[in-house]
Length: 406
Image 1 (tube, rainbow, N blue to C red):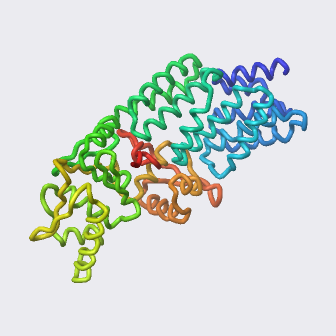
Image 2: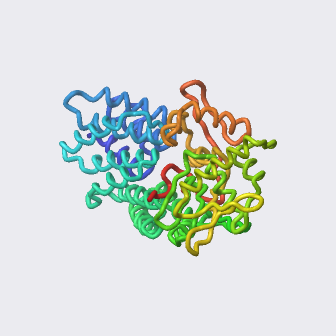
């Protein structure tokens, strides 16, 4: 390795991409192309970075498989930053295996951390936690240790375990301070600030109160009957009844919970559940059927009892009833939460992360764009979607697999 390549590499480790480019910007040999690609990635020029890294990987010969594997890992990180989730994880795993064969421990761990972060974007929390637990933190340099602890904190937050999340963020801050990388310090600071922001709204007997993540955790552990509008279901302690695929039943359960301990008029229930302004006898008959289904699904958490004018929710035991509402309402709340990270997402990546069809996501994005809540850049396959950051609260409860299921 010549002196300019070594100096550029040191500049990139210190978070100085411009300093690196000053040394290798006019060179086209594979090591310089790789360093230029990493520098462009640090500057946010991801398409150009990807192109340079691919050229570098092609430029390394058959005997330079270690350098080629490093380029594959760097390109995978750029793809992650671009929210391009379509690539096969096997390519990254093969590169990690090659690096392991060459005893390149730092880059092996880097590759596996990229895989963990990809799983987090897809909402695969159990797989991400399992992969993270297999990493040996003793061999991590401070910058990668900070990334590892940030991933551990995100997993804990998405599972509503705020105490281990705080501990992981404290370790991440210490590692980022040792690494002296400003971008890492800023990311850790933002993650710590999210713990003190409202994450949901508690609606109880007509009163609304913002809740932080630790308060949501305490509420779900209290045994209170919670009609959870973030994950669409009923929860009481460890018991969980999902209504994510039963929108009519969830609309009925939420209407009954918001009115508790009172009842709800049949006309109001029909209007909210069936979205019609002119109910007739067919709607009344359908309401009776859906109430019967809700009774069967909610037992033994609660009973749905008929009253003179409608129906009322009666929780089992001495429980109270609370609605846990997201900080923003609407059918596209989770989509907006994904876009709130300020990164340009492709439609295909959003569909993968949300577990929805690409056509469904496209329709939702068109509606949001018409309302001025999102905007697109590029055209055709290069089109990406952006939304302004959702200031004032955290979106953890709206992200895929945000809450644990019993």
